[in-house]
Amino acid sequence: MATLKLADALCVRGLRKRYDDHEVVAGIDFNVPSGTCFGLLGPNGAGKTTTLRCCLGLTTPDAGQITLNGHAIPQDSEAARERVGVVPQFDNIDPDFTVAENLLVYGRYFGIKDSIIRARVPDLLDFAGLGGKESARIQTLSGGMKRRLTLARALVNDPDIVFLDEPTTGLDPQARHLIWERLKQLTARGKTLILTTHFMDEAERLCDRLAVLDHGHLVTEGEPRELIAAHIEPQVVEVFGDEAAAWAHSRGTLGERLEVAGDTAFFYCRDVAPLLAALADAPSLRYLHRAASLEDVFIKLTGRELRD
Image (tube, rainbow, N blue to C red):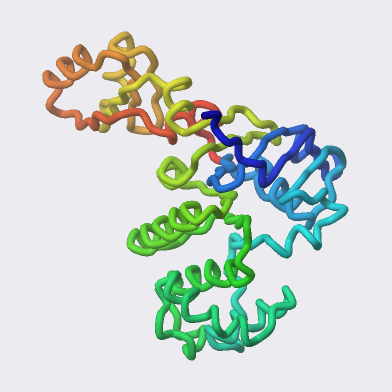
């Protein structure tokens, strides 16, 4: 039996956006199949937020074609956003309303009857780990609670597609894991997630497919494990210490590739046995032996320099 091909929730072709003499998005193409989690990764200033704003019809592109949930963007942005939820990078919960009132007022923007919204509130709050907080004032909530309320608010219209701009920034590990679990539940229910994040472990856990942007260009796209296999040697040894850089440069041939950043040397290897044997004779150095990760791919493709 032939495999049923999912329709694309989002299709972007030739997207360009320039501010003055700086091209922020430089002709990118990507598709997001329905019912999947798609990651849009990149350093600060890579063009991620501008791309999301163009896809939502909040910023008008200079060129390109965007189709969101079957609607042409920006021409049919209002109709498209009726079935879209958004978790912004920074929480904008109204402090003058209670938890439940925030959901009620937000639902009215979609023309949903108050009775329907009130009926949804308990399930939305349970989903966000905020059960019993209906009457709580926003000032009494922790940062993690506010972030989870922002997620619940994004689901008030039962959207087909949810855009999440760095949804776990600033959260403690417990809150991050709870949100990861909830996002996986959404894709299991057939929702489409479009995610930006600076946490590569988050992207590796959640994303079925992802694209890496840098300086407005799409530099690679694929499934996380495929990208790791394609771009990085399978084993990494991180060597730490004041003498690590000098020691590593004198033994650079022990790995296929060597990078030094500060007091850490990164050996990228296919066979780590010779390197580990050499480290056994260097007790003053500490090291970590691990499998290659998506973060290694990200650093290789976008560099280690700081971005503002």
